[in-house]
Image (cartoon, rainbow, N blue to C red; front, side):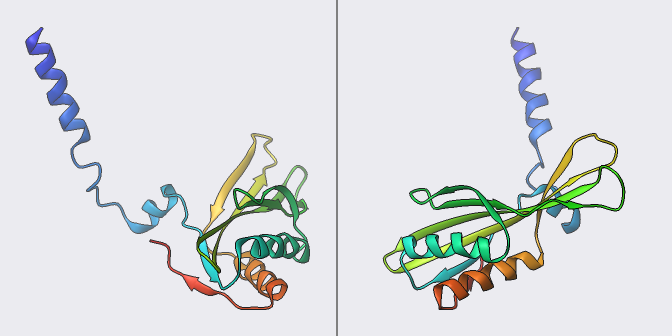
Length: 156
């Protein structure tokens, strides 16, 4: 019994050794890490920024599917775009998180996701996109609605 316990502890410690220090190539590591949201900070109250973000979605032709002012969450999606062949369709979605940690200063974090339905009908993919023109489009529309520019914040 005691030998079995020692064996299980040894196997467990060997199995978990080096998991954090695994030196994976940056491109491979990026594929498995959740993308960090693009964050900008605005000199405005949270409620004002939230309402401006909802209007900005309409400005860039996105439909708001979920919005919660108290939580500071907006989820929106674009229209479906048909692909090259039968059964192929694409759609983008935006996940917006609006937080105010200091009175009069509000942070807006955005993640762009891309969904694609393939012709094999095996289901849709849902991939968070690190670099996309929609980031600039959304922030540009938000700044137009607010009437003020934001400052980019580097996520920790």
